[in-house]
Amino acid sequence: MSKEMKPQFNEDTLSEQPALEQLQRLKYSYIHGGEFDPEFNDRCERLNP
Image (cartoon, rainbow, N blue to C red; front, side, top):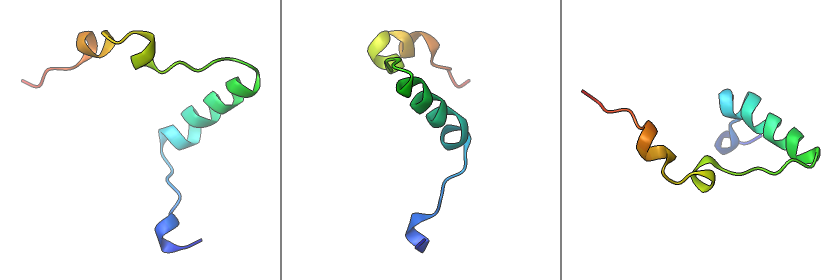
């Protein structure tokens, strides 16, 4: 493996992506939150004090 291709070990690569891939293999559809409810981000954004 080259230096440019360092594996990234984080929550996304270790749990979220594998779970999504497994569910898609089981014929579940994936819908990104922004597509499901475009106004979701507006209601859930944290405001910095």
